[in-house]
Amino acid sequence: MSINLSQVTSPHFCAAPWTNIHVNFTGHVKPCCYGSQTGYNSVQDGVWDYTDPDHPELNQLKQELLSGVEPKYCQGCH
Image (cartoon, rainbow, N blue to C red; front, side, top):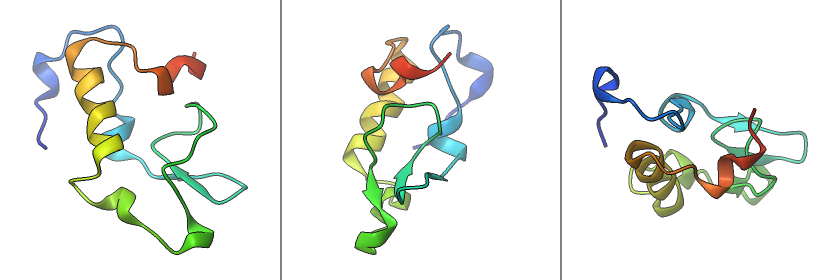
């Protein structure tokens, strides 16, 4: 999925799902440190499909951000 940041005007937009991989202290892989406590994977599981460009939950998060919807995942963010 490609993105042209110059055309994004949503107040809910965040670039983290395109640029970040956050691993918290419990080993959960997430797009950022502020999002919900739900991880996309766990490093203990040895599964890194979060980096797959076809990851369904990550792509859903990206689509919501691009469409101006505040994703449920992001509600913990300031």
